[in-house]
Length: 457
Image (cartoon, rainbow, N blue to C red; front, top):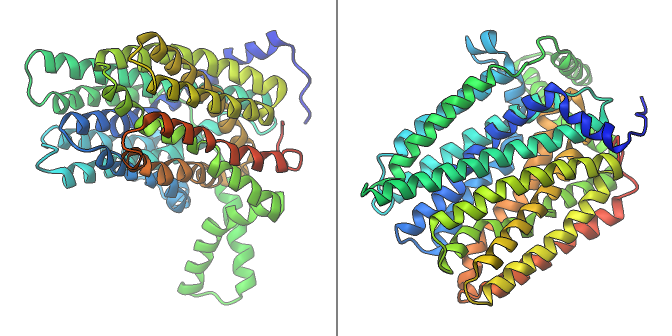
C-alpha cells in the first residue's frame, strides 16, 4: 500500500491518534530508569568524592543495553506464570522488570557508596539489565500499536516514543535533582538514598498507567516462528532432544539475522549496522560527562535541574514533535543528515562554554541546543530502525538494531571520563573531539542512503 502525500495539517493530525498517547507512556517507562543509572548515579558518586574516571567506568553498566538482543528471543517466547494470562505477554514482562527496578531502589536506599561501591554498582547493573529487558517488550509493544503499512503513523509514533522517553528521563531528572537538593537542605545526611524511595513511587504510578495500554491479544508471530523452526528441522532431518534444541536456538536467534541480511543484501545490511553503531557516539561521549562538567564549572543541582532537565524537557518535546513532522515530510534519512550536522555544531557550543568564564546564558543556550539536536537525531533514528524490522521478529530485530546503536554509545563512551583525565581536565578539547566523532556515521549513511529497503526515506 502506498500512502498518499499529506499536507502539513494532515501530518500534524496524525498526533491526535489515541495510540500516540499510549506510545508516549511506553516511552516514559523506557526512559525513566536512565534517571537512576545515568544522571542520579553520576551525581551521587561525584558528591561522594569519587573520581571522574570511576564515574565514567561505572557507566559500563549501560553495556547491557548493547546485548539485550541476546535474550530478546527468549522474551518473545517465554510467558510469565499468572501475569501473562492477566496482562498479556508484553505487559507481563514490563511489570516484572519494573518490580525488579523498584526492589533495587529499595536496596540502594541502604547503601553507602564509599563503603560499598561494588555492591552499589552491582545493584545498578541489575537495574540496567531489568531496564534493557523491559525495553525489548516496550519497543515491540510500541511498534505493534501501528500497522505495517502506516509509514507516516510510524514516524509519528517514533516521535511520541522519543517524547515519552525524554519525558521519563527529563522530568524524572527534575524530580530526582530537586528532591535530592531539598533533602540535603533540610539536613538529611543520606539524601540520595532517601530520594530513591521517592523515585520508586513514580515507578508504581507508571505501572498503573501501563494497564491502559492495549496489547493485541491475537498474533500470528508465534505461528510464523514455528514455521521457521519446521523449515530448519526438515533440513536437519533427524528428530531428538539435541536437534530440537538446535532448531530452537537457530530459529529464534539466527532467523531474525538471516531475515535482515536477506532483505537488504550483505553489503547494505553491513552498512546499516555500521551507521547504527556510530551515529550517536559523539553525543554519548558528551552526555556521559555533561553533568560532571556542569558541576565542575560551578552550577548547582537546582540550576542543572532547571536548564538541563526542566527547560530541556520542554525543548525536547517541541522539537521531537517537529522532528517527527520533518521525518514525515522529507523522510528519515534526510532528517538524520540534518541532525548529524546539528550534533557537530552543538558540541562546539560546549567547547566555547568550557573556554569561557561561567555564563548562565551560554550554559542555557548550549543545553537547549543540545536538546534540540538530540530530539531530531533520536526521532529519526527510532523511525529508521522501526521501519527496518520484520514483524515476525519485531522484538528481536528491533532489539538487535537498538543494541548495536547502544553498543557504540555505551562501550566506547565509558572511556569518556578517562579521556577528560588524559586531557588534564581540558573540557574544550574534549568537546572538539566529540564533534569529530559525528563524521564517520554520516559518511557511512551517504553511501547507503539510496539502497536501503524501507517504507519511507
